Length: 309
Image 1 (tube, rainbow, N blue to C red):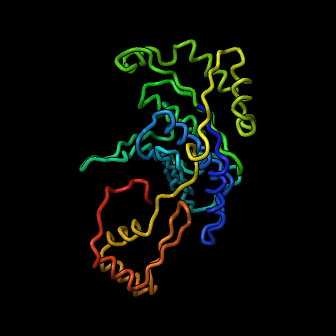
Image 2 (image 1 turned 180 degrees about the vertical axis):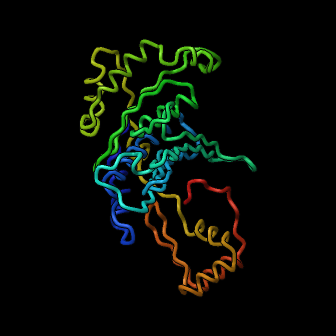
Image 3 (image 1 turned 90 degrees about the vertical axis):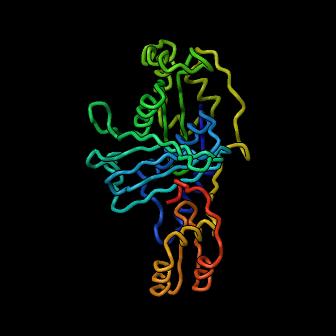
């Protein structure tokens, strides 16, 4: 699978840069978040999950958390919380894994979640089998897929201020009911010659090639000696695009969850309650009358959204 984000990725960066209270992300954070957005789209397209796929990196560096969320219709959003200086050449571990305590979590939140049903979440550390720090998001996600799905996976990711792109190669299970057999997969992990050949070719892809080449040129350059069948790309309304799920109603529910006393203390201190969405930058203003109505008007309680920060 190949993804190339342009307009959606540029809008995410533009919204952040126009936020007067935060300003633009440092360059290494932009690169990490772009790779996360591309990877999340690839994973959502790969599993075709009916709901939100949330990719989150968190740790003890200046980047406290970075999140990319992709819905089943490929609408996406991404954000990062930066608290401290990030060097121009900062690596992944320097941003989020200073003391090897960083984590990568992938959450699958069904669109039609049943009462009491919890989202599925898998978590892996940002280090390898020998506790060595992993310095590339692709390595972290390959490790995750091997641990959680028992499937060989190769990822190549890259991002700059214009494009966030990714290539995913995965060995499909070949045996078992519905073509899924964990034991058959385990027997073949790292041993399938066809997969290993394709993976080696994929890993030869350079960062600039991934960022600049169109899909046809890229596939021909990598797999010119293979039989390639390319499916029609998903673009426009059917492809990846920026969208945010925040709303005034959701923010009101959040304020309601704080309780009357907490809301009244904020009103007393500031004269109003102001809440900004970290994903899209939208500001929601509640004056004393608005805040009072939150606690006097019945509010429907939807399932908790793990992607709201």
